[in-house]
Length: 281
Length: 279
Image (cartoon, rainbow over all chains, first blue to last red; front, top):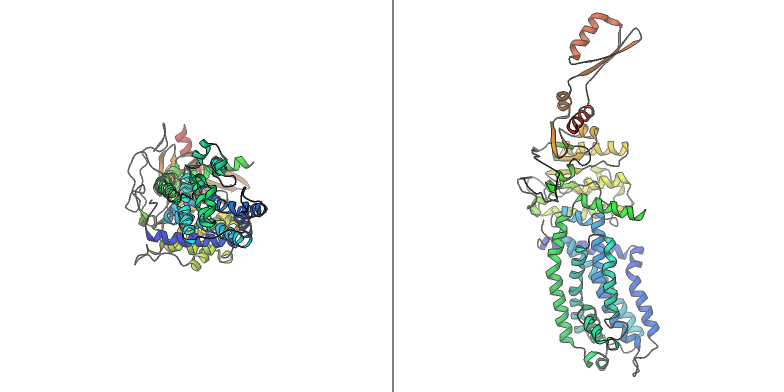
């Protein structure tokens, strides 16, 4: 079995991803699940709209909005994909992919498509509301596009690697807590400049902070850079860290996935399902 | 094949010829699933040589995968997809592996007909009944017109009607497609009904190998003759049922009624074999 088997698999994966996106958009329970986080986020942003960034007349809601998009990318790419893979392993979807020629390639591509579509949908919705209801949101398209693309690349492969490494869906919380913690120290809802130095240092290792910063650079007027660390958007560093995380994800996902897929078999799926049934009763 | 210190399969050696339907029969824990998963390329073996369609399944590529069909006992995948949508999609994976002799994949409409799911073509897979779901699994297993089809305990958890329906489907398949089939089961009647040849596995070894009727004969040649004379019922086990019956008529003539000659069935053979092995 090969994990990456060339263009046929990629083509089939794109088609598969498209079908899955359409299924989600046309089935309301799934749609509610997908829209839940962006809608709650947008509501929170609307509540913050009347408040001002201390010392300025700029809306706190507008300042938080790009960071929220960054968080959507980080959680969708890492947690979302981790969950998709864990669930697909439990119900046998992944084993089916393995039993089909070029199936694993198509499977991976379809998950990338599906997750990207979710993140981009969140971005577009937030952006529409942002432009309509928030003062001061100004889109710098080239920056927005490269930050978004690198944002997907920096998170989805990592999600694939983590999802493949988890033995069972019940370990998903193990992936939720670190990411929630990271969000807290990544300047999404609370300015990183107010945190202790060592927390700032940790926050700046991971892509969540840089995604938020990149989206702020793409969506806020230049003078607001003054409230950031070093008083700058530090775009070269955004580029560098996101590229490094993309490289790490792209390098680690295929071998971890391959290792996991090689061990997948009918009796493993059955054993996992039995454990799941014991948990539910 | 070992798991840690426990040897699960030892010295298993068998061939399956093209077009043959072979059943791996054995009690739970005998190594049936391990054997079939090694052949499917889903499990690495610790030792030994395996060749399936001319290749080692542990190392075979996507082209080999396209020639093999797999129906497992526990598929629950793609619950959100619709029946026709999934078959259409999965069929595409086999297109590039079509050959002059074997057009791939099946036409979705014909395939739905074959497995009796035409009425459910637009249903969500998660809403299918257990029997319909299993027929869909068979459809997916054969969609690429496999040269070799694996069925792992295909009717586990079926009610008798669903089981019969499934057996008819497999018969239709083997008659029409001349596919080679390897199935595992612990249901003797199923093995007897479906298989040209039965391999009985116990404790990680093959303890018997042959056509179902021959296995039954080979093991216990004794048949049972039952009859009534003047309302009195008699049962006599004998190795020469024909001779005994002729003598019976010579002696009693037309007084013999309700005559029955029973051959040992596979179940008797199987129980005898497994018991013999375990003691």
